[in-house]
Every structure is written in C-alpha cells, then in structure tokens.
Amino acid sequence: MALAFIFGAINISELSWGIGRELMKFDIAALAFAVALASTTSANALDRRVRINNYTSYDIIEFYASNKDATTWQEDILGRNILPSGNSVVINIDDGTGYCMYDFRAVFEDGDDLVKYGNNVCEMSEFNYRD
Image 1: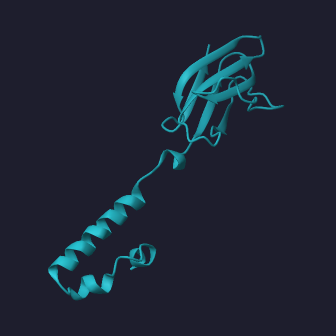
Image 2 (image 1 turned 135 degrees about the horizontal axis):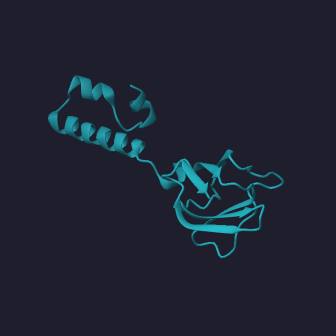
Image 3 (image 1 turned 180 degrees about the vertical axis):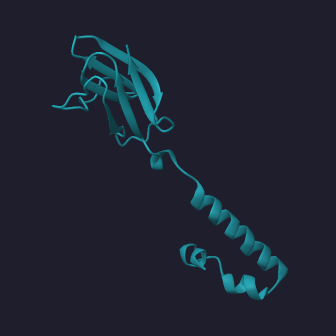
C-alpha cells in the first residue's frame, strides 16, 4: 500500500480485483520498475566516510583529500588539529562533486609528505598509514 502512495501510478486495488490480465501485467511491471528504481543507489548517495588510522611513529599534522581530477590539493582537513601517532579519525571525504576516487596526502611532524593516489572512498571504510 505504501508503494501505491509513493508511486501514484500503481493502483493496488486494480491489482487485487484483477480487472483484466493485460492491465494486471502492466501494473505488475510498473511495480517492479518502481521498486528497482527506488533501490538503485547512485554515486551521490554513497557513504564517503573513511577512518584514517595513523599507525606510524609520527603525528600527522596535515591531511588532504582531493578528487582525482582536482589540479590542486584542497584545504587541510585536520585544520588546527593533528592526528597523533596510534590514533584515528573518521572523515567524510565528500567535496560535493559526486566523485568516489580521491588522492590522499598526509604531512607528518618530521616533514615527510606521503601521497597515495586513486582511493575509492565509496568502497573503503578505512585507510592506514604505517611506518
């Protein structure tokens, strides 16, 4: 009954009373299409939260994530914060473009800079930095 309300074109009463096989086939096909359409997940609706784990001996003092087509690094996601050695943080890596592929850049307290290209944030839930 809820589907009839959401997808107004489907008449459940006609399905239950069976006013003709052809109409019933059409209503069932429309119902199947509506359910398939409702269950389709677009890239824009995907979860882009990633836990960044710092398993190194150094604090991460800056962290950047830019979509694969960006020509510059975006802002430092950590801002005034740091990601201490042995800790983690969950970051929503979504710049509003609908991209899933991002490049990561971490800057460590000793000055080292590590870049990892091509991270699919729509499919990963964790990313690890290790010594």
